[in-house]
Length: 568
Image 1 (cartoon, rainbow, N blue to C red):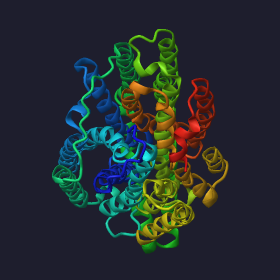
Image 2: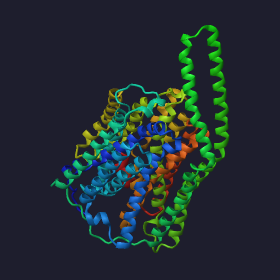
Image 3: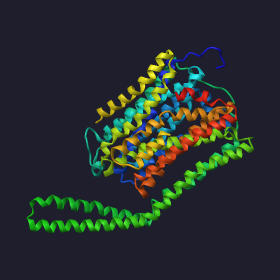
Image 4: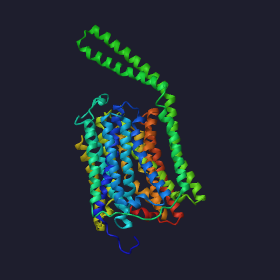
């Protein structure tokens, strides 16, 4: 890379590489429609439905942690040894295995099986993503590396826009609207077809990569910096996170839960009784109707009594669950800075963990991915509320696509620098591209039927369309955060850059922790009020943007130069 002339971008390899970015977005955003579907189909609470995200993003953490453990003990980078090309091929094949597991689980109507399938798919994504991002940077001049990552992000956003619409069609078919209480009667054969196609696409992409002559092997034979103290600390943190989640999952069993479930079973019987009585009114005389109305009122009174009983039984359990989830969040948000403080005093064995910009960046990635996913995953439940349109699960896909599609606006604009256009051409494209991206989002949704903090506050303290579109704009706020946070976090790390990248990939775990916390908070205080979580998340990201500048300035690092390509 230390050349006086710019390295020519390998556009052939880059065009092949960006296909995997599409897959990540397609599956991840599709989960936002899959979550409300599973909630109704399997009769889950909001937290349980968020386990879709938990399983998916936990896999990123586990996959990256495994690569770090291997590198520490083997003394070499597994991805570097295999090469970027083979690593992506192996990751795609692993994701194809996950798609097969999903097919079997859907066929058996097993929610835990679906979680396992998504976990395996995302494990493959973890390997792909670990290889693809540095691979994109290496395919041209280092100074324009982040624009190529942004280009991949733009293709990723195309996947996130299309994913919800395709998944909605697979789940609900061509029906414009399906009642939520009728969702469990829908056939799942189209979901099986969807994952058959996805699995074949994974295999097809793997073959394309393996046989593409323009794609270099991307092997890097260099010893990995051993950081035993950092490894031990991360393993301890993992163990503590497991301990924190055990009480949450175990609380879904026991005498109280059995009693609650028993009461809930009467709901369906009572609902059917009310429906039958209402249907019979047309054949009754006026006197008989009075008697029927009295029966309906008596049943509704019993229903209310049972609801109050359930709320009384569940309130302490819900608070206990939320407490443990917040403890899990605290382990990450407090634990990482504590580790950094220790590492800065005793640098030996800590590796990249000694740099404050990395640790703050790890938290930023954790929170950024968490808030990005949490908004999309909880949006469906919000839209069901009367004050937000009262939409059914089958009707929310265009809104989900709009949210994820808004990321395209920033990412497509940021990707312009990846191409060798004249400066004047780039200026015009930067003006035109946002409108093009937004137009594509509107077209796709039509065919299917500091700004971040402000947007979330507007959404939190308002209702109706104003709140909906304020929350949807959160996607635009997230659009170029990934490359910007990534670049700031690894600035000035030198030989620790590769290790730092693995740490940052681990923090995609935020997508598995923040959404369930918002989901559980919504079970306690309501879905609308739960959007206080994104407010705090965007607040930290604003703090990171300000504090990291001072840190890099003290280290003599030109942070403006480091982020100029991604910020534009």
